Length: 102
Image (cartoon, rainbow, N blue to C red; front, side, top):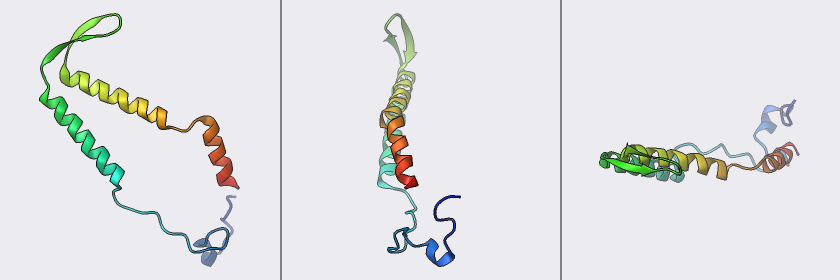
């Protein structure tokens, strides 16, 4: 049983410390989501505008690819790297879980 499940209806909206009622989570689109959307649109427009083939040099080989493919792969890799860099470590996640259980 999770903490707070045994509270009555009048206590359910109160903070566990007996303080003010909890505020409902904000709904709608945040500023961060707008910025991410605009940047994604700019990336897509830039990729579409650069459709000609180019020579791409990797560490051990080279190949011809369209600029749009190179941009899409670079954008995808940047997203994946950003996701893992911004993700909390196992130790941080364990601390967050412990803090939430207290």
